[in-house]
Image (cartoon, helix red, strand yellow):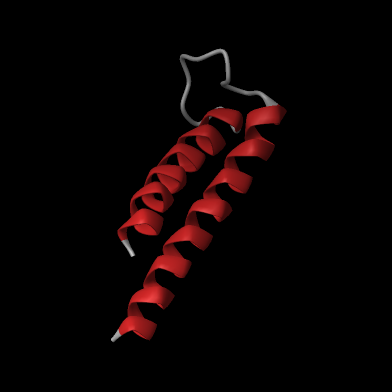
Length: 63
């Protein structure tokens, strides 16, 4: 479970920050206002959510 949850949470947080920077909600970075990061951020966020889901599903199956 942990090998999926920990990276999943990290990816969700990073994806969220990148998304907010891409949409210029969080300023002060070269990534702010960039369409590239507005695209990459949600993809990373979804991958993180998938890892969390896999970790939870494996835990449920183990019990």
